[in-house]
Image (cartoon, rainbow, N blue to C red; front, side, top):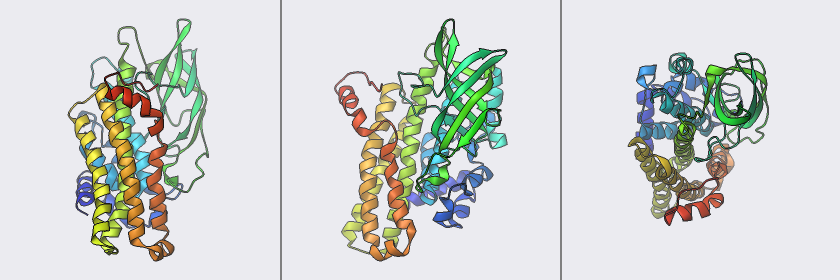
Length: 378
C-alpha cells in the first residue's frame, strides 16, 4: 500500500532494520506483555528520534514522526502506543530547552543524556488540558533538605517497566500555597514501584501499569515550575505536549488500521468498490493526521494547534473504525477464524476513542471555538 510503504521508508531512514526486525516475529509476540518490542525500540535508536541534533538526536520534524509512529504501529500497535508517550514528552521538554532560561543547567544535562544513552522517558502527568497547566497533579511534594519528597502516582503509565526517566506533575509548596510543577525523576530512584494495572490483552505490550511514588527525593534543580517572571512556561509546555500527543496517538491507530487494509487489498477479496472504499476511509485519516503534523511543523501553536489536532483526531477516529470494519469484512470469516491477528487488529483500532478528551466531552467547547470563542478544555 503506497502511503504505508512511504511511512515505512521514513522509518527505515531513521531506524534502519527496525521494520524488518519487527516483521520477523509474530503479531502475538509483538503485542505480548513484557515482550521484546521496546527493547528493539531502544536497540534501533528510537529514543533519540525527536531529540534535537545539538543534543545528539535526530531532530525529525512532526510529519516524519507521525509517519514513523504509523509504520511501527502497523507492526505493533503496542509499540506505537508506548513510544508515543516517550516522543510527546521529549518534544515538550525540548521545546522548553530551545528557549533561553526556561530550564536549569542540571535539567539540560539530564535531557542531553537521552539520545546518547537511548534513555526511555515515561509520562507521569495527564495527557493534558491547555489553560489548566498540568491539570491534575499526579503527586504532592513536601520540602526537604535540597529538594522535595514526592508521593503519589499515575495509572495507567505506559513504559512503566522500561522507563529510565519519569516525568511527573506535582503540587509543589511555595510561600504558604502550592504551584503545579513538572518533576524529572530517574526511574531507579528509591521509592518508585510498578504495579500491574492493564488487564486487557489489547495493547498489553505498552507496559501501561501503575507507577507509585513513596517519599521519592527530587532535587530542587529537577523541578520545572511556573515562576513570577515566567508565568506561562508550563502552559506553553502543556499546549505543545497536548498537540504532539493527540497527533502521535492518532498515528498509532492509523497504523493499526493500515495493517488491516493492507491485508484486504493484498488478498483482493470482495468487490473492487468495497476495497477502494476501505482504502479511502483509511487514506482520509492519513491525510487528516499528516495535515495536522504539517501544521505543527510549520509552527502552529495555541488554540489553533489544539483545535486542529482535535478535529483531525475525531474525524480520523470515525474513518479508522469504518476502514477497520470494512477490511475485516473483506478478509472474511474464514480468515478471522484461522488467524487471531485480524480480530486483534480490529480491537486495536478502537482505543483511540478512549484517549482524553473524549469526543462527547469536547463537543460544546469545540462548537464555542468554531463560533469565535476561546477554546476551553477544563
